[in-house]
Length: 409
Image 1 (cartoon, one colour):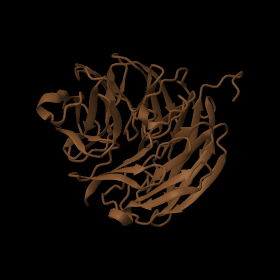
Image 2 (cartoon, one colour):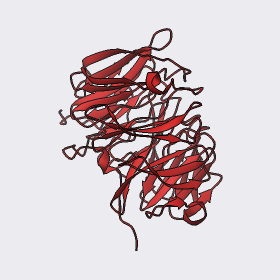
Image 3 (tube, helix red, strand yellow):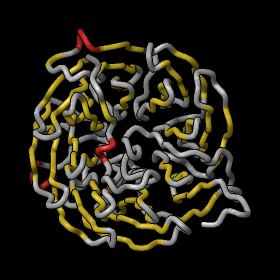
Image 4 (tube, one colour):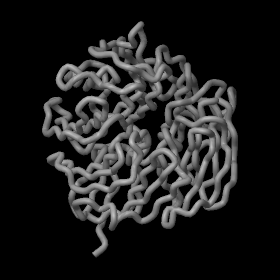
């Protein structure tokens, strides 16, 4: 019997507006927006609603809820001065700035400092993780509800490019994946109190991937990939459910799920894994296809309208048939990609580290719609909300919108 699966809508509260972008890769964790009438072309003057200077290092993606836009950064000699910014989406005006302190600065990716993980929100609180090992719950006025130092509790985050995983919400459960050179673990936290509900040790080394929650046969699973395997965990208890081998030793991309299939990229390889509620080692039975010539070291795949879109590190974009893994097109779209592509309104947006955002028509045949130069590099992944695209550049946060003389906000 075919299993029924609901994608990670569990990540957001029931009262969430459809146009919110509440965390890493949006409302479903897949990098997909259901909106229409999204902008295609823009420049320094046209279709830019506003741009604001963002002090400090950081490559965390913007998070949008209602009229608020959140962003994190770090600075100081050790990048242990931590910052959370809240902006008014109407005009980019800074509403508040929370200044925090990091307890255990570690190795880092210089442009990101300690602010690589993207926050997540339920509309009442913002949950923020930094590479210093500090985890914060802030209310919408910027005041801490609770603070934890995972570094002090379980040891500093140890990997050569800092912490990259982002916290996610599954209902009222906050989930954090910590894969590093010390004991790796998956943590399930009560979002209201900050207390552990469960902690599961992982046999994994250095990874930067973010989990994805799904629902299979009425059970909520956490899909986690890293160090040679993808795994499913019971969200209620943290207990392992299944394993599929075939990933790289170190994984940065986050998984994507569509039509009961998990799509997992690592290095130059992408796998499709069937999800049906079975448990155990499913390596021999559940791999639908593998494409060893299509993958990304950093950017996460986006699965949209039957195709898998991948942004390779060396500027090569690829499109695969989601059902078979067959390569549909392969094009050079720029120089280097660190940001993950996002999709919506029959379009796929690829932002590269040179600051060019390529807009591609979704579909099995390649069609370029626009090439937009932001004037500064882009490492953070875009966010889409209420007809606007939010882009974090090296120095500025941009709000892009299809603006007409009669359109007023």
